[in-house]
Image 1: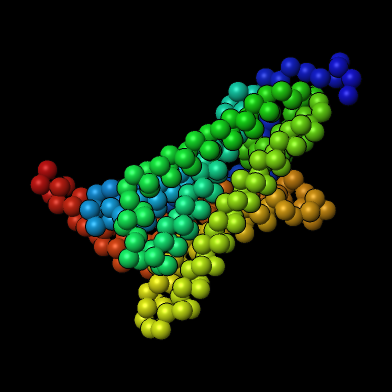
Image 2: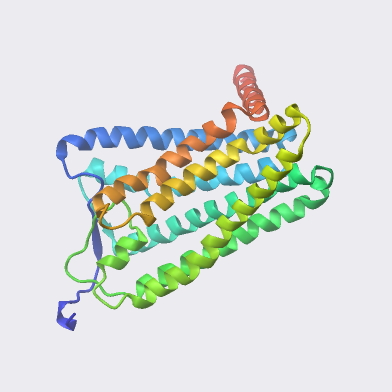
Length: 315
């Protein structure tokens, strides 16, 4: 690409999910509803865990962190899309795009790390129940969450700095509803080999290690459950990790389905549509998955509502 074809970028254009004017009100209502459900559902999980002493355990500590991260994860993309639909403007500034990409990668990475930590927690609880409180003591739980934050911050910062070195041409249209890393790299006019190399050098060991950790934990969990003689014991052990396994499956199957599908099978527009599954739908469903069959969470939510109603009545 010749130097004169490069331009100083001040803004990008997010094409969104559809350019059909008739679909915009429907998309606005649908995504506003899903966003509000996501924020409310995950916020209730955080409040229930923090307000109920019965839930001050490692499992629910990690769950409350995951719920907080899911709120932030969805908030990096959906509000901007809603504003664009409402104002009928698809523009996002260069700085806004880089910032959105950074925070999206940050909270996506936290989701990956926290799901791995939660798998390890379930492995210790089921396979080493007598030593659970000794192994998963509060200091270690805090360190695992802190390490997840540090790793996510460093990785997202690295990717964002790598994008800053790229030059862009006159075509600044992003066929997505947010500034997605792959789309940004494809949009660049300058050499992207180093970006792609760094991307895979980090994703393969870190992402692969997280997936391997989850698979190892659940392989051990399945072995421990199969070794149990009591049917009731097997059911109780499986029920403690069923919710987490559902969330892991939903997150990884939807996200990997988007990024591992061949370019021939999916164009950029269909990829953006599929991205809704792991960026919006999965964080929205997580509170329902963790609370529907969880007596502890349902009991904590009931006590939280009763406390709120009582305080409202006294005031």
